[in-house]
Image (tube, rainbow, N blue to C red; front, side, top):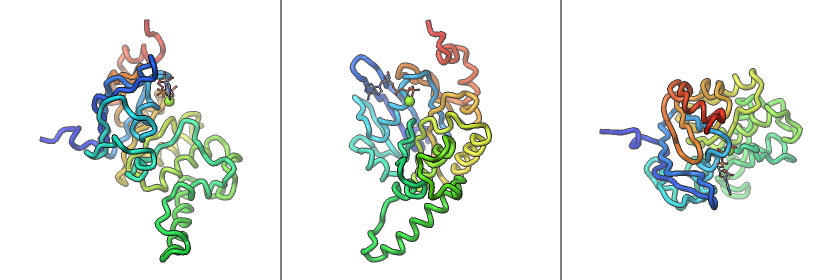
Length: 252
Ligand SMILES: Nc1ncnc2c1ncn2[C@@H]1O[C@H](COP(=O)(O)OP(=O)(O)OP(=O)(O)O)[C@@H](O)[C@H]1O
Ligand SMILES: [Mg+2]
């Protein structure tokens, strides 16, 4: 009999992480099923970004198991996680501000061969074509040669997304990718992200705006003080008055 855990793209089991007296991950079990958007929801400091850092090897868990398609990520550093097809975006975007939009996309692409190696020229041309196609997909072609720092807020968010799209990663971890987007940009963002699911992508994203969560996610995991309090269908989680009280700060 197959279970959710058997088919999960990513599986966390009994994951713990403390920072001094702060419990950032408390015996966390989390499964990301393939081809769906899972939203991590919870108040500030709940441990959402910490989970991303544990998955990508930016942090090591104190204990517990983290597996990508059945293979442990225990000894994997951030570069290794990227090589295994995990891409992430950051709350603070971390673009190369002085580089152009095009260069920002190019900079995250793996080089299969250097220009002076066999096939190097063709590979470089293919990379540039792919970078341009990705900019087209996210609607940034007109900004191709602008410096990242000169972009508006929404364009910077789409550039951050382009840097993930172009990597061919199959697991995306997006830290507040839609926060602060105007409604039109947000609609475009949702269409873009959900459109990638048909290409075999699995997505976990962090989002504070519950309307956005409702509009974009198939599943929600609700975190508070490092603990997963509930996981399941968005409607069930969002309608739970106990979780709402925690989320909106009515905890006693
Ligand atoms: N590198 C670190 N060193 C020490 N404490 C940390 C570190 N990273 C996170 N913390 C603490 O762990 C807890 C969880 O932080 P985390 O950033 O994961 O929360 P979050 O759910 O992403 O919050 P937010 O919604 O504000 O982004 C917080 O109390 C935070 O201060
Ligand atoms: Mg965070």
